Length: 212
Length: 176
Image (tube, rainbow over all chains, first blue to last red; front, side, top):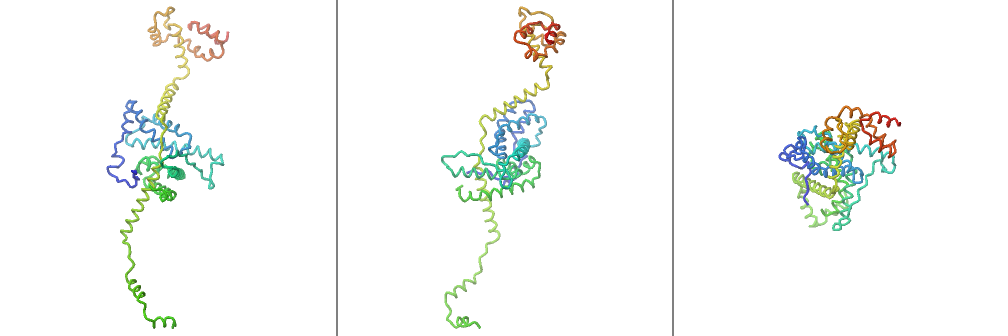
């Protein structure tokens, strides 16, 4: 299995964010200059990533994930003229997504406060893992692992979860994540470290059980 | 003095004990700090690798029609934004222009009873609305009134009226 490396382990230099080609920024600039096809390409290239981020942050049972993808791009349209290529496009886009996530989380919490069913013994919201389709070749064990992974990610505090997801699944550097959530590199590094420690502790039994 | 110890000292030494004593002279081997650190690092890396592998098993697949839905939402928003600043007055004006054109009425005063002038006249008429047309606009804004308050026959009669006949239209609006 080829494993994407944790940004924390990734060497800087040629992999530094500002040196990487930014196709998103190119498309965004082209769109600002009137190329509507560039906007189509942006949607094609990034809607899946936005959906993935929303799914991992809000959970797979969240009913408004697709609506929020649309809302993200509507906000992109409204903010079209404000974009400057000084920031990576993905960072800018994920900032929009993160704000939507915050709004959505607050809205969900206020809704759940009205419902006793949503709270666990400690008063924390219980995020139920999504149903997992079983792969007939891998069987139940793989499904159990995936369920456990999702539950472990869902149980992370919001700030740790977004930082971990952006680092692990969207390959953002600490600096880029800091831009997205409005924090410092140091704080992000600490958040990710704590998130990984928590995940490692919770998922440790899987390491021993599964032949990975 | 311990009688047992006295007895032990007097007894012949067991060669196995001597061997143990000799072996005990060899100091406990200590793992060099560098090597110990290397092992810790390798374990941590392996742990990271396994965590990443487990996290990597969770994949998100976007719905197949997601891109189309985003484009549709953006198009709908664009339509709404175009429509919003126009306002009801302009909408009514546009509706009245279309209505007038469909009735063959030339706002510049030429009658197109036969319709022979075709679309060109209608297009030209849209460019320069006449004073008469502007005068009847407030009345034509009452399309909703025509739709809701008149029965189908009355509505048909009202729509057949030459829009220049403002007096009659006013009567219609007043319900007379």
